[in-house]
Amino acid sequence: MEHSKISEKLLRILVLAGLLSSCQNDEPIATLQSSSVESADQNAKLIANPNLVIDGDKTLEYVNWGRYAGKLSKVTDSKYFTEYSYNDNNGSTDLWIISKRYDKASNALVNEHKFQVSNGKCIASRDVTNQIDYAYMYNAANRLTEIKAIPQNASTYKIIFDHAYYSATKEYRLRTISVHESTGPVSEMTIGYTLPGGTLITDKYPLNPDIGLDRYLHIYGNFSNYLVQQISVAQLNSSNQPITFTKLTYSTNSDGYVTTRVTEYHPLGYGNNNGVKTTVDLLKYSN
Image (cartoon, rainbow, N blue to C red; front, side, top):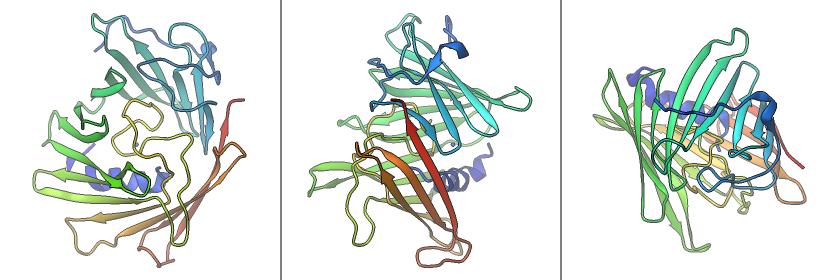
């Protein structure tokens, strides 16, 4: 991944996706172990019950037996599949997670990423394929505040997560995500949890933002108790770029879990319908 393109690329991936892209003794997870059976572990605990098994074009599978029962084992979409393995027998109390992404057509390894998890939070990771090390910082409330990226052959950059306090509900929510290069902030995403005239919707199965994070591993703490309903993205280093706008609407089942997510992306900004792209994703859960 080229450093000069990192901010625009990451933020664009997040908007289009709709949000909200060396260990020893690893125990690989065989395909025959995978299922959608709910379980839990203190280090990589799934947030909700039941488990998410379909998210748009992605199918999620889980380990159904052994010491890592209940953990995510595989995510498959139309072009790729990602397999996860876990290791907590490494001479420390930390859990190591390895994700390996493969091309479905050729079975070629596309990307390998290793995560170090301590007390349920990811504190460091390494993109083995692109040779980038990441360090994760949290505040006193255990909310992710910063990811520092250290590429081997490029300048460092940071992704800053800012959490705002909402007095009406007496809780913090992720408000902005910004990408900072050596010259300063270059991109900023602003997140909203209501639409004009609308209300908050409780998020019964939180997913991670698709920017610098694995979407389905619950190892980064909490971002909000409510569903994201709008996103604006500004390129701060270019005055000629429009502030893109994304509107998200949802349908839920009787238990409050999202079953349909509609993402309406406005590349030219709020109120401009030219080039609008709408994506409808269906979500399903294990029984």
